[in-house]
Length: 137
Image (cartoon, rainbow, N blue to C red; front, top):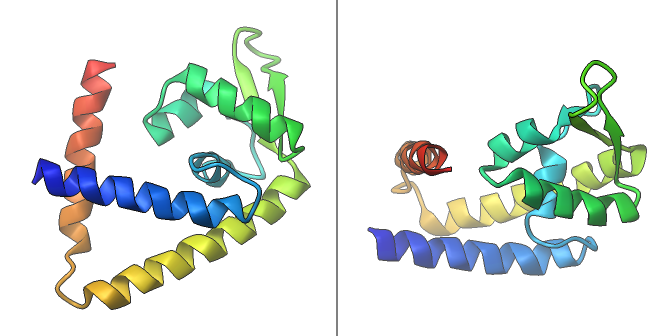
């Protein structure tokens, strides 16, 4: 099972890299943008938890997204130690483009996999792996 998951993960990542490159993004930046809510700035720690990555990785990704004017970074007025990330209008527009890419890719995979694909099992495995990763970090 591990070999199949690693192979599938690597293939999905490579295919997504090709898709999001057309949007001017790197793989992972799409997920970060999609984790943001246009109404409320998100703390770096919240984003890191949602994406199961380290806060330092979020910060590096935000550097690039900030340069592209898709997000802005600020300090939390209630707690100066916390950095908040807010999506810009250009970032919201990019979310729509990302959503379209994701839905198209998802539809293609579902059609090719057919009705035997059990999404609930994939989500269960993802949850188990996320819990294990959280314990180790």
